[in-house]
Image 1 (cartoon, rainbow, N blue to C red):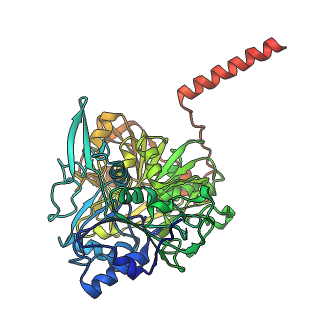
Image 2: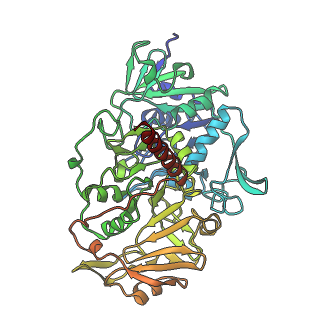
Image 3: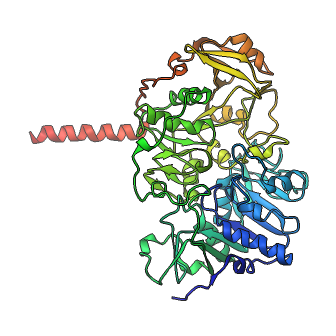
Length: 553
């Protein structure tokens, strides 16, 4: 076994050349090879090199807890182009991430592509395939007939094509062949074999390593510790040493940007669920509770960032922690997904899959329902979740949103109906809108389309929009109000707060009064109806067993 060179972050930076394409395995606050990225920034400050690199991030690298991740590269002259599923963002950000300033000021070319598609672009590059053919992103801002995933005016129209196969439209994304892949693991042995025992997810480390290695590029692995050659059990090796060119050892490597080490999110122990506090009673909790009423016992449910992330904690409070199997794009299956800066990890997961494989499940609609957020909804039922002019740093970008919604059968969007300073109380089980937000989120036309309501109707997706004062559904006749909160006035608080006419269901109902009282709901989830083909097979088997038992008797 050939021993790999052990480098400092600054020494590793010398492996990056001018004009290189550098792919980084990371996801917001977890899995970021931050020290190595900082080494590249340090080298540029000292020497003015490397120059004009392209940085690729399937999911965001870093968050707004400090200068982290891609912000180390956010310097004019160093960074020419960024291709990212999302960019650093977070709640209560005092100083916007530097990369957002570069994007908004047209100082860097910037593409915002679906995270799952970026992983597949690496896989295509590794396998010497031309690219990725997919329906993900059709009729959204990713579609070149709209913005073509361009984040500013300086970005060229050269990355995505519309093509047709067998009478159907597809988007084509060219394969990625990075010159350098920077990945992260927990342990490397002297031969470069990598294990991920303390990581919350392996993300797409293997795919990025294959893409670089197979095309003559370099793979740099940042790890927490070094082990002697051959000491990692082969079944524990997630990236083999044959792909790794150099190792950077960072003993104080954080598990997430806010967690030094928690074995309950890397699957090394199961922590009592009593350690998780129930969400405080609030408008957000009301919305999350109403979203929980959409669920069925036994479902597989995807979860996005925002208010909907509270729903697992609602189920926990109601005594149904195991009723739903949560799947999140970073790779966790099961457990209780966590909140805020550690969103993307789960406490007590049943499995931790590579993010690139999790997107195979999500793009293929191998789940029952998804709960997501929104910034705006328009009269076609289209949703904007990624673009807010002048305040882009409060959004992360498309991330896995387009991958998830492209084929999901049931989509639930959760968020408040208005934005801005407002005074809405909950009094005696009723909503009391004393002063409403000045900005409605029901607009004639969303500023950019992250989810296409038009395509959802064409493909038969069921779409529900849950707010604190009303529940709406996307129907062929238009966006339709199906429930109104107790205390809310249909005309004043819902219909008049929309820029376009809303339909009202003939059987308009009041939202469940239990949602608006602090105590537990006493939630009971209906049983999920399993796939009809599976049910037929099981019934046939049961019938066969019964006949066999009768003959034996």
